Amino acid sequence: MKSQILKIIPLDWVAFRAARSFSGVTNTNFPNAKTFYGAIYGEYFNQNKEKTGIVKEIKEKIENRDLEIIGPFLIDENDEIYLPTPAILKTSEKKYIQMGYEYEGQKNIINGKELNSIMYKKIKETEDYPFNFIPIKIYEKIKNNDETYKEDLKHLQENEKKLYETETKIGIALEKGKRKTEKGMLYSMNYYRFRDGCGFVFFIRKDKNGILKKIDTIKLGTKGKLAFLETKEKETNIFEKETGKRMNVLITNAVMENGIIPKKNITAVANKKYINIGFWDSELNKPSTLQRAVPAGAVYFSDESIGNISDLNTEYGFGETVELPIK
Image (cartoon, rainbow, N blue to C red; front, side):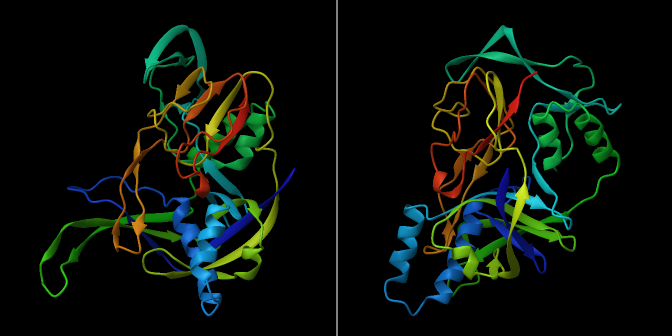
């Protein structure tokens, strides 16, 4: 089936502020979808700032979900899309690739819910697959029960081709009129420098008013760097539903009231370490309240489709899943 995609190609390096205070250096987090919604609607505002009631109009568009884009993911110069790596994919020093499976013979209590365990055929020297994103063609092969996806993963490990480089820097905010650090205003800045032709990509679920057709460029990130927008079609089967038992891979971050457990019927979970999600409040010019999120890549086993599993931020595409078959 064909899907509409939105390519966002930065002209230069882009920087994303981690919207949180901290007392030490932590791992860099990938920018979340709200950053891109803000950039798109910001450009829409600039094009229509003389229009009466434009601010109210934009708020209504967000509330009504006139624009729904799912991501961000990565895309290379050949339009190959890279999705978050499922948490159940493991490797070893010998490049042995294996996928976890649900084991009903052992139960775990997770956040008050009894779930089956996740097991592996070979546990010795097993570690997480080293890359956070893998080509969409590997997802497609798994959906088609094509075991050659394991060779693709080995090849990817042996011939790593980075789409971007990352650097994290620390910044401070000063009190107005004083050469003094404002309390609680330490922050980190994430710098991404993409290879030529590479950038971010979203799947377009809805563009009710054709906003994306009216926008060619946006100012992206903290420094407002220029990025080019392009909509295209992509042939893929990853959004097709499975039958019977299935694995649901979380492809965008999710915020759930019960930790890692969604309000859906699941039988097992392979989770990744929590991440803290925060947004930069442009009106108050400071970080918003932090939310603890389940990162993209977590895998939920179920007997039926569970769809979106986030309790918050679904208007920004949080909690989206794709289904993979179980052999």
